[in-house]
Structures are given as structure tokens and as C-alpha cells.
Figure 1 (spheres, helix red, strand yellow):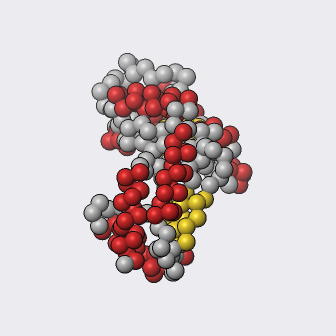
Figure 2 (cartoon, rainbow, N blue to C red):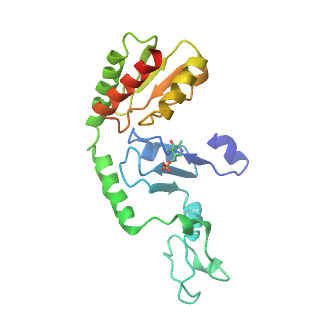
Figure 3 (cartoon, rainbow, N blue to C red):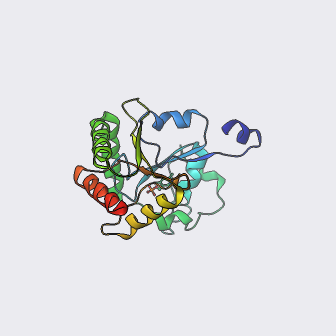
Length: 223
Ligand SMILES: *Cc1c(COP(=O)(O)O)cnc(C)c1O
């Protein structure tokens, strides 16, 4: 995609919000030549929900940074980091950009950096194994339900496994999916393949107790 887009001078912006882990994606997606890559700060990195990381082509990062300005400066005094923004290109000071309304508080930026360090250092690597055992417990718990369970695992010991729960048909999967959402607590299963009768469980931030609730509620749906 990068190759074709660049032939036509189009930048490629990658929504990589959910592409961690593996940690290697922090670098390997940029290495494809993609121009801008966005990662969620609040998912696997475990930073604040409202944060994220935008990385890639310097000019585009500079453009995004310009969208964050407020109006509280004077052209003669405005002194953006020169290695990112070439001030001489501007006839006037850019005014309130669209990013201003999405500003991330300083304390959350610091929290994201702390979380990112922990993520990179492997502090959460063990949770992939825990995730797998939680999914296995769900599979055991669903015995006796008219469903077929498959744990999808890339086997790299870093990517999160996914549990696929196959029901008899799309209609049934849709009914279960809707019912789980409407109950208390609401449970949101992955619905990417619901038409094929499949429901997905992503174990990110799932704990033992929540997993038991999922099992109970799916059983209730078939009784
Ligand atoms: C989670 C997710 C988002 C939203 O990311 P936030 O950091 O929660 O705003 C966007 N795109 C994809 C593919 C996601 O998985």
C-alpha cells in the first residue's frame, strides 16, 4: 500500500491504535515507509486513556503540532522548536488549530512516557501468558454450550491470543452479542465475524472474575 500510495504522492496514515503488542510494531510499521502512525496510549501500553503516540514523517508531525497552538503568542516572540518547525515559512502566527480541542494534559503526557518505558522494558510480557490461561478457562467453562471454541495465537509469545467462539449461525451469534451488551454488566464481544456465526474475545485487560462473568452470561443465552 505504501508503495502504491507513494507512486501517486499520497501519504499513508496508519491507524495502529490496536497493533500493540508486539512491541516490535513500534518500529516496524514506520519501517514500511508509512508516513504517519498512530498508537493508542490507553490500550496495551497502559497509559492514560486520552493519550496516544503519533510518529513518522517530520513534516507531517510538524503540521500536526501546529494544529495544537493556542492564540496566546505574538509572531515576533513565537519560538517553536526549530528542528521541527521552520518559522520562516510563516507570514503570520497560525491560529487555533483543530488539535487544540484535543489537548492532552501535561501530567498525562508524563504518565504515557512512564507507561511506554514499562511497556518497552517488558514489564507486561507475562500478561500474555495470563491472557492465554484466562481464555483457556473460558473454553473449559463453555463446555456443554453449543459452541466451538478456538484460541487463535500467533505463537510469538508476545502477541495477545484471541478466543473465537463459533455458534451455529450468524443469527445466533448476533443474538448472543446483542444480549451480552444489553445485560448487566454490559459485555462487548468482538463482532468482526458475527455474520459467520463467530464471536471474538480479546483478553486485553480481562481478569479471572470478568472471564467467569462472560462464561455465565453465555451459558444463560443458551438455556
Ligand atoms: C482502539 C482503537 C482506536 C481508538 O484508539 P483510542 O486510543 O482508544 O482513541 C482506533 N482504531 C483502532 C483500530 C483501535 O483498535
